[in-house]
Length: 74
Image (cartoon, rainbow, N blue to C red):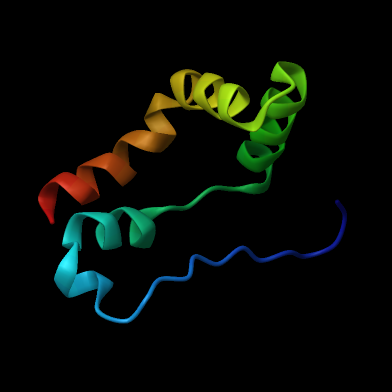
């Protein structure tokens, strides 16, 4: 918290060729500081990363939709 941060997705060589949908999803992932803060808060409130993430995903369909569309189009 505080200061400039960067999050990167790492993938193995050949992922784009082997599973283009997974590559497209990872490539499309994008979120701003507020969205990440909301995700962290949802995880804290749920007391479990998976439960909190599922809640955040349900509540942020507009954010997630382009990621899924990118995977579908791959």
